Amino acid sequence: MTLSFLDRFRPQRPLPAPLVFEGLAQVRAYWEGLRRGEALPKRSAVDPRGLAGMLDRVFLAERIGRGLVQVRIAGSGLTDFAGMDVRGLPLSCLFATDSRAQLGVTLERVFDQPAVAELDLGSDRAGGGGLVARLLLLPLAEDDGAKLVLGAVSFAPGPAARCKFQIRSWRDERLLLAPEPQAEAPVAQPIRRFGHLALVHTSD
Image 1 (tube, rainbow, N blue to C red):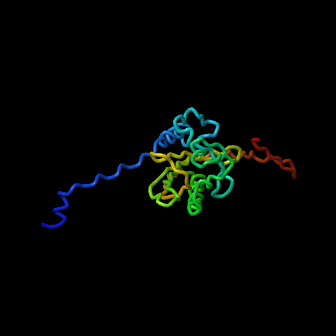
Image 2 (image 1 turned 120 degrees about the horizontal axis):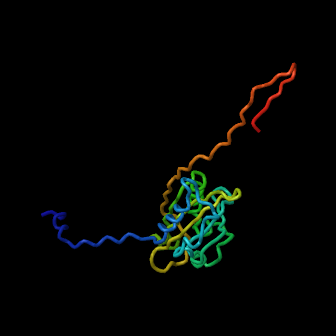
């Protein structure tokens, strides 16, 4: 009998249950519900009541440079995790130094494509090998020239130890937007000539 045959009769260790990051599907569904056709939702359409249950882990951030966003509104869950009020600070302050470049690349894809992105986050502390949170990034329509993103963080079950996030994996989904309607060019009317003069009329 071979060793592989005997292995069939040995008790097998159960596989660990996959982590469930609650609330992100709710936030994504709410954001999708605000879209009109293929357009991005407007900031003015976001109602906190639609984010009940996740409101403490939701934030709104504005693009202030390439790959950089500043947190404008943040829930108490993010404040508690960071140990400080993150409003007015760059989102990158929550991330370890070696993950900030990838965060910037992902943010640019969210704004430029545009795209929806998810990032799996670990801890920068020694022994923090597992995932501690997942971040969802959802683009919003420009508001007076400002590029905005709606974000939500869902923490893994159990107490969240204070740390800096490290990006373990990421994925994004490009969105197809309807082309903006183009203004019609004025239609030129036939030229009327009076001797050496010419008069041209347009529709405007």
